[in-house]
Length: 171
Image 1 (cartoon, rainbow, N blue to C red):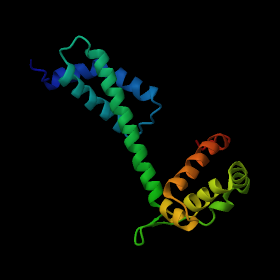
Image 2 (tube, rainbow, N blue to C red; image 1 turned 90 degrees about the vertical axis):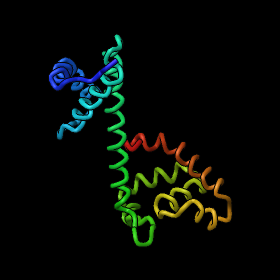
Image 3 (cartoon, rainbow, N blue to C red; image 1 turned 180 degrees about the horizontal axis):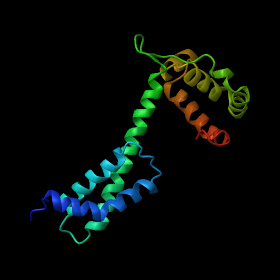
Image 4 (cartoon, one colour; image 1 turned 180 degrees about the vertical axis):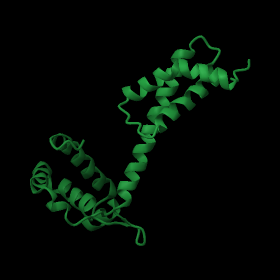
């Protein structure tokens, strides 16, 4: 079975599914100023046709395929954005995290609230790992404990802070 399309056939298919692509973009709250998500949707439509074109479930499969590709693109953008944001804090010569010393003074009430919510070990994890940028192994060595223990402090701190951070719209 040959699923290849001529340019005219694809243009007709695109006219038929154009609103659906825009609907999926809108439904996912995507701001597509440069049209890259729309283009991703068009490419996904093409691929869906190549894979499911003659199948009676094509409309449903096309929708699923397009939505999935848009979500993948959102995730890719998020990873790139996170990497670029974190990249600002890395000293590439020494391969260490550089922490802005003003972070503790950014919102004293916030840090006070965080501190009050945590045990001493959990705060130690936040202070050394988050604020000072030490590795988990370095913290374990400094505190003369195991890496697993330090990871446990971090997990417990994260669990406790979820409710605190909701008030600050951080989660």
